[in-house]
Length: 202
Image 1: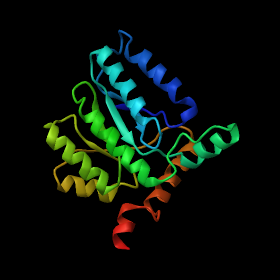
Image 2: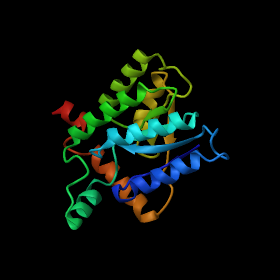
Image 3: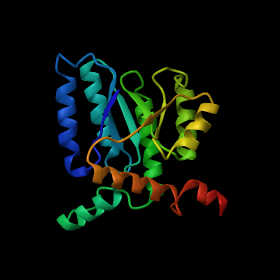
């Protein structure tokens, strides 16, 4: 199973266009074991979700959308400042968390046209996704699974497995320096003062 990542705002639409063109080609039109990542920290994440649902509808074969928070917050901010653009990402983690739930709910209403896989280590977002999946009737669908990052999501994976949930453990593949930045971002998020578990223990 391969998930295409469109992390950076500057290349997001290019990646989406190539992904779309590829999946609409006769060779790959019926392929299901493919997906694309969608970043909830992007302010236009809902619009991106709508574009992907439209692609799946035209294609006629569902694909997976890995819904993540986003890993390159500081890079996006710095690039926007350098170019004189308004920031394309939410400044506060709680805004990203709310957008994650909003996009998750929107995509889950399109279940069957697309499959959404929540990729988060945040218990609050996980419980929200579980509730929506239960209400929509696909909590136990084999296509529905949570995703956690290899090396950082082991406690979450174990907790989800105890609850009887399917979990996919994923690892980024690509440029080494970008990968190190990605892992550093995840570590910082997990130890942030805005972290959900940190807040509960205050």
